[in-house]
Structures are given as structure tokens and as C-alpha cells.
Image (cartoon, rainbow, N blue to C red; front, side, top):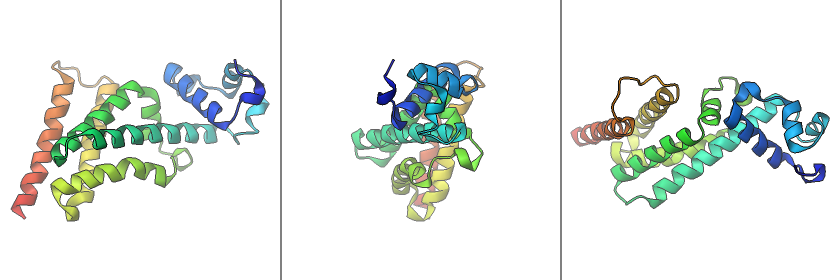
Length: 192
């Protein structure tokens, strides 16, 4: 256990993130978090106002980590836009599977006070939009982005909540779905 003097805002958020991932957000309490950090619960209030702020910061950390994963996939992929977008989608899916509880918390929090700052959210959206713009054309990049996000996020959420139960290889189905979506936008652009 860390000494109280070694506990800072980042370590509190990181511990809460780990606790949520291990046990779910329902199991997280400030008292339990303080015990895990080796401090008394009131000490947390020197770093965070309340549990709402803590959850917002956990969501922010999750989205930052997702952004790093997505941007890394785009940078490492071959230059063809279709290939880069598929790599990005697979990195997104892999991240969600590796962090299912914090991913779901960060992407399903409807309350504004739990949402990460807009600039953090753009860290995920802008790389997706830049790549999809190369496929759909700049003028169609926002609707293409929204559709791609709906496809990728929706598929991942259905997987994480065990709704895709009819068998088959889900990764193959995911890849086929993303590729079909991209081909549709490529065909649409050629038809313009």
C-alpha cells in the first residue's frame, strides 16, 4: 500500500479505474477506494470533490487510453486508407475487450457531468474522421464517421453484453462488417 503522502490525484483515478474494471462501478465506493490506497476516505476530498468527479476522471482516463490505442493503430498501419481504418477499428475493439467495464462506463454515461472534456473525446473522433474522409470524401466525412462509430461501437457493445449468440467467429464478422461499410462509402464516392 502506498503511504498517504504518495497518493495523488492520478493514483486515485488509476486505482478507481482498476477497481471498476475488476469489480464493476457498482462495487466502487469512496471508502473502499481509500482503503485500497491506504488512506482515510476524507483524504480523497483533498483531490476530488465527490464520486461524480471521480467517475468523470475515470471516464476521461479511459477515453485517453482509447485515443492512444486508436492513434497508435493508425500510425502503425500501411498507408492505404481502407487498411488504416480497419486497423483502427480492430484496435478500438481490442481496447474495449481488454477494458470492458470502464469502456462501457465511459461510452454509456448519459449525464453531462460524467462525460470527459470535449477535447479528449475529439482525440478519438478526429483520427477516425481523418481516415474515413479519405474513403468517403471530405464533404461526407461527418456522416461517414457517425455511421462508422455506430457500427464499431454498436458491434462491440453487443459483444460485451453477450447479445451476439448465434455462433460464428465474431472477429471475422466484425472485420467483414467494417469492410462492407467502407466499400459502401468507396462506391458512394465513386458515384459522386
